[in-house]
Image (cartoon, rainbow, N blue to C red; front, side, top):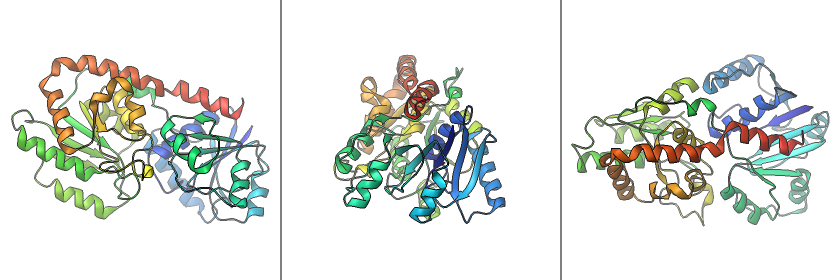
Length: 362
């Protein structure tokens, strides 16, 4: 099959959504001819640079995938129809907008719980053009089905790399948090985590002796990063804003706890787009044996599952209490780690591939 992949976020972004995108691309490229659609103004040297950076970021080869400038980002309706009609399948990530595709099969991936309706004849026609729709979580699926008045056939959870499940001999006194630095939408709220860490250091100085908080994530808002770094000044907090996939996996294996604050103080009924839509970094940390202590909203609830609800928090005091209790009871850690690894297994690469091929029908 000839398959086209499009995302309005590629080649600008480097996060969980892009990992999903390139997981789909690399799996399909094993048996099919895969083309990634890029903005048509991009230069050949820029393509080489971006591909190299994605390969380094995700620690995988993209050599079987073609990267081409196309009209899908800003072309006319006719241009997009002409360009897509050569493909057997078109898979697109939506940012809330859609285009008409003339591919034989069209699959739409929805990774944000959009609440704006898709009214109007033009929007309804475009929506019907995408016969197969999937979402990155049951949370996203439910919100979008109600808002768009459409059926989403699949929940396609992001995949955890098999390397995350490797056995770990010894954990260190590290609390890890992974996520891009930005303010908009589902901000990871690293500022709140610094406040929680400072509070723990003040309340439990002996218990917290030797512990450090480590942030890993690319920078989309330099002013926000600078602000968080100012909060963390003089605290045992480290920042890594440009590391590759192998280095990230090493941090997962070293860390004992995993913190995540996306959705903090957000009313998810009013603003579902501001909570975590899924949260692949939490799932990856769990697979590596990190005990998650995360805001219990949005897709994070699905990542943890029913058995791990005791690790969810809503306030800074909750976060500190749960973390403190865990540190005071290290004898319970093996049981926690068994439970979290079992939960993470449902997001395996094999299940990801199975759902993907079910959607494309091959």
